[in-house]
Length: 146
Image (cartoon, rainbow, N blue to C red; front, side, top):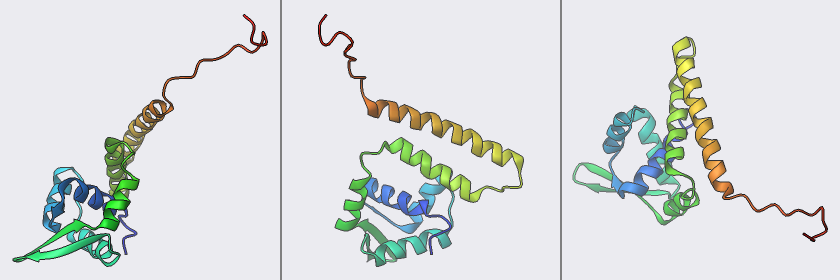
């Protein structure tokens, strides 16, 4: 279970982290609006898996089932908080495109390559920012004398 679209779990956790509670239907609409349509047959098994492992909880309100992060789920999300959110979102989107692509169509492969190139630039930018300002270089050729 969950091998086809593992990025959906990460997206579910991100969504719950920023929205508090959700229904499966709300998440499906969100994915559609973000250009990452997924099916009921993908989302609901992931929700069940996360619930079975104590990462999310579910409660019924009328005919709706509302999902929320548990303490364990919040701890998992905190492990990834220091990662740039836009980069995480782009990576999840790329994984979605990769899983959904028709590999027999050249234009799909070109789109994936273009997106991968943009991801490469973003990763390099983030890495450069993480390095911080360059440390001053000390001239040791004079033995510390000027």
